[in-house]
Amino acid sequence: MKASLRTSGAAALSVVLMLGVSACSGGGSGGSTPGTGGGGSPSTPPPPLIQDLKNQPPSVGALAILLTDGSVIIQAAATSGTDSSGRTGAGVFYRLTPDANGDYVNGTWSRIASPPAGYSPYAGASAVLADGRVLLVGGEYNQNNYDIPFAPSALTDMSAIYDPKADSWTMIPAPPGLPYIGDVASVVLPDGRFVFGTKLGKQMWALDPGSLTWSQLPAAGKADDFAEEGMTLLPSGGLLVVDMANTPHAEHYDPSLGHWIAEPATPVGLTSPTDFPAGITYGPAPQQTVGGVTYGPGPPGTYMPPGEIGPAILRPDGSVFATGSAASGQTGHTAIYRPGAAIGDPGTWTAGPDLASGDNAGDTSADLLPSGHVLVAGVSGALYEFDGTTLTKTVSGPGGSNPPPAFLLPLPSGESLVLVAGAVVRLYSPTGTPQAQWAPTITSAPAVVSRGGTYVISGTQFNGLSQAAAYGDELNSSTNFPLVRITNKASGHVVYARTHNHSTMAVATGAATVSTQFDAPQSAETGASTLVVVANGISSAPANLTVN
Image 1 (tube, one colour):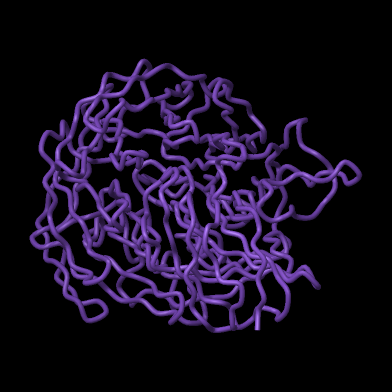
Image 2: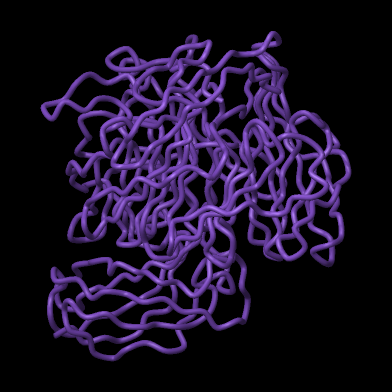
């Protein structure tokens, strides 16, 4: 949960400018070649390990989402003031578009539509669906009211879906009989349904993306409530969670059986104790109509938060790197999970390396780099890379008390977008390259496209080997979907074609043939070009293409 908004505005900016870069960073300036994961040629100095974007949005929040056309939307800082339209804070969103060379460091920002007045969620669930739309579900806070104990507007049961083509939002009715959603563990299943586990119980709900209706899923065997837990999608289609109330145990869900399977205890503690042992009161939620949909009322109650945990990321070797929270001033641990041979079998745990002394990953962000390393943000503001064995600090934190939180998002360029909430947007350029077998492959693609037309492309591993981003329970920004990048051979200019109707949202699909549709952009330059499919920052071999 987000118990407080730690630092914002000018104070956060003054802190982030002190961010140190470790000795492994390079000099120079500029972005990296799209899809290579950063770095430069032997004759060119590599770009800085981390740098500020040349252009900054008016406000920086704690959530960034990659769209299927290669652009990124971010939420404004939850504490920002009123803008010219009258919307404030979490009701404001901005869109980052890379430049003509595909570089994000030189990208430009534009304002997008806000959700209907009355829904300004902060710290909720989010996802990009297989049709390319963006889903926001619930919210620990709403309408810029961040009180503890919770205000009546908190733990909202509202949800909305954003259509990037139409730049419009549609409100979604709440699951029947569920008065509160809040910040929930969630995932998009391989079949495209969005699923979350209830914050105040053991129920699971699935949203049909076509009808935008909810149905309750069977969830037999769940050991504890879903509060503060995060879901990691496994190659089998199962869902792994590390238990919070049932610590130090874990469990995984088999969607085909609707049943939870007990896992062994983690070898080290990954959770921290609650900051609110007496609980936090919530409600009563009022009845209100937002965007034509009526929500509430909801009864009062007391939420007993179980503590915090860190993000968990599936790696290309099939293991899950799970990071841990810790009490203030103590050191966070990590653990490595390896799934069982079949989806019904429990897996195994081994201890991983600790974070730096006194740092932990409680309620922070992580993403997967093209090299297979996991990039993790500590509560100190430091960034770490896990290479499968060691955990190395690559960017130092700013120091001082209450550093601004960092949010990490993998980009199709192979870089990571770093949001320092309330302060600045940065770009992390990692070293290292992916293994060849991790890349998507194209088996069928059009040779000629006309701008504005829609086409089908198929091949393997279009969704990548991982969801590639995690943030504990809330602020989800998974990128396990294909992007299509078109490069004009004469100019070298780059455009991303909006993809949609992916055949699957599974990860690590191996040799199975998968497909997606893409819209040839009106902005694409005509003539001889190349086309690649990009998944989690790793691009396929190019296919020749003529754009008319």
